[in-house]
Each structure stands twice: as structure tokens, then as C-alpha cells.
Length: 202
Image 1 (cartoon, rainbow, N blue to C red):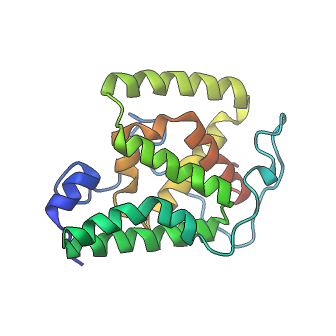
Image 2: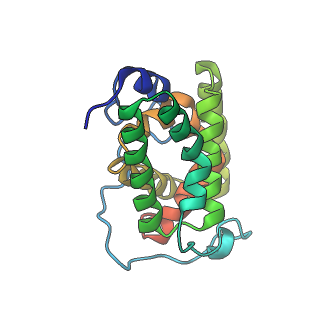
Image 3: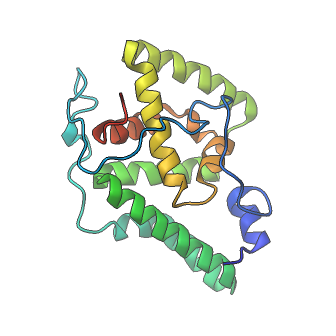
């Protein structure tokens, strides 16, 4: 499927979907834990303080359509209004990929909404390079204090979830890095918890 350059510039900040990001410039950069997904393998143990209790985000909904509509609906409408067929197709592919990822990881509705709200915030208001660097240091310091010796495991868990999602949503990791979302502490915690339930935090 082709990709409209004007749409790509608006969505990704460049004329074509970028290759997955790599390296250590951002907290969620790189490919994460190479451990393969094993169906049914989960780690349900919660963290002290209740921040990572299993019921934090509720059960996975029967359908993610309301959540997906809240993020993609306006963008799809604009693409149709502009008669941007390639943009419409690209958004449809991203929506389908997001649905597959949410379903595969059995993300609760509250967690899914939080993730898309974070994306909306950072895509509409990308952080400056200075802010991104400062936030990376602050977030890393806070998580090291909170997670202690589990820091590397939980960061690896978050990275792996993002890497798995990238397989279904082209350019996802670059968008996370470019906007600064990859250093957002709530976003990292959410992904880390999702991955921990799948056994990634080992």
C-alpha cells in the first residue's frame, strides 16, 4: 500500500514512515527484551503500593472500537474530507494494528484510553529537545528509586511491548521518541505493567 507524503509529514514529521528507532537516546529506544512471547505465560504478581495491581486497568473490553474511535475518528474524518485516500488507508492500517496489539496484550479499557490520550497529548504538543532530555533524566531517576533492582527488568518489559506493537504499527517507535512520549513516566509504567503480565519482566 502506498503512503501519501503530505499525510506522512503531518503524522510522522517526515515524508515517509520511518524505520524503527534504536539506541539509548531515549528511555524506550532500542528493541527491548528479545524473549519470545509464549502464549499463556503471564506474571500476575503486583507491586507494593498497588500501583501495578492486576485490576488497575480493569478487564479487557469485548471491543476496543470506542477507544479506537476516540483517537482515530477525527483523523479519519479529516482524511476523508480532504479526499486523501492514501491517508485513509494508512489510518485504517494503523487502527487495525492497534486493535490487534490491544487484543493480544488484553489491555484493560482504562489502560487503553490512557495510552491513546498520551499519544494525542504528545503528538499535538511535541516536547522540545531540552524538555525531552530533562524528562528522560527525571523519569529514569524516579523509576530507579521506585523499582530498585527491578528497574532494568521493567524497562526491558516496556521496551518489548513497544517493539511488539511496532510490528503492527509502522513508525510507532519513532513517533514515541520524536515527540518525547518515550520518556513519559506514566506511559512507561503502563507499558511495563502490560509486559510484566506477559512475562517480559524477567
